[in-house]
Image (cartoon, rainbow, N blue to C red; front, side, top):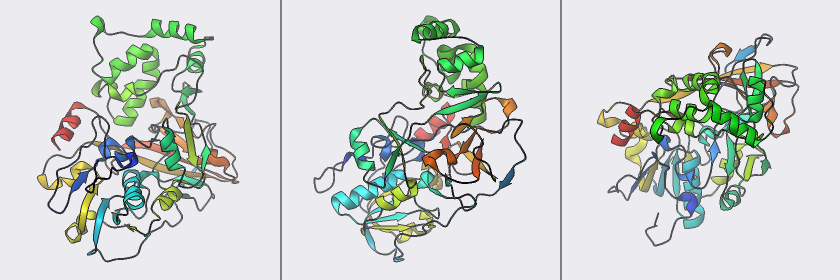
Length: 420
């Protein structure tokens, strides 16, 4: 975006959005308005930062001992970085939200253009869904809103993010419990060999096997839904074992009810590669994501107000430009249109005392119905060589209602989003 004075904003603060994401709003009399929606999942960062949340899934195997389940306990978070309560002060920039998109923009405006920034966050912490903390019972760092992995193919993005805190190399590997066996996800040669008792040895043999399994559309037609995508890539057997039941758990809809982009994003490997991502830079912040946001927002030009609802104080604000990073239907609620359909997550916290590890990997997915109603289990002790006599893990379930995490990618929802 071109700045008023002719300076170009750095690429990290570009308000571009991926296909289907939010677009800029119209200029307002107060100086300007920019809109960013959760539908685009980190709009600003889409060009510069890739923070990925692997799909949720889990339930313990049948031989699991009795578990102690509690409500999430967390150490106290920063309630405010700047305690100035004078909301009547004029700011060059106002940010609604203190997650990744808003924080990158705020940092760029302050450090590159010397602009004053007010950040208004409804939650009692910064960092959005990346917020993490030290669990009081175990001393293990956990994430409040599910697993987040940082990866990028861009060198300048790597150089940018590593300015904030220290980063430790980490390559994410996911396993799924299918037919009582742990298999790699995404599907690779090991997955197929384990599930079907085969001995595929190389790419050529894997490609030949896939070709026999795949169900191709007639007359070269393009896939119209995610079922057609999955069948054309992995065939009926893998679709029935993994893709179909997991999709229903995640979305409460079968693949044939969802757009083709849902399962098009899931890679299928023709080798033994078991990393979830292939980007050259993959890492985790050594001191947690919250520390990254604290460093990012440390400028004296940035004022952060947590536990503050924008809609309660919006008439008091004096802003040169306003960026809204919440759900688009929340901003335009006054129009009385239907709400967009989102899926949310429920996190069941489990602590096991005097236990090394509960599962073999950081994330284990549970696609099949017989494994339970959850989608995955996340055990944070696997990360960053954390030491504890105990372990803690979170059983994740997808649900309607609650925090709006995932916009449902069906035609009805897309059409409503376009209307907004």
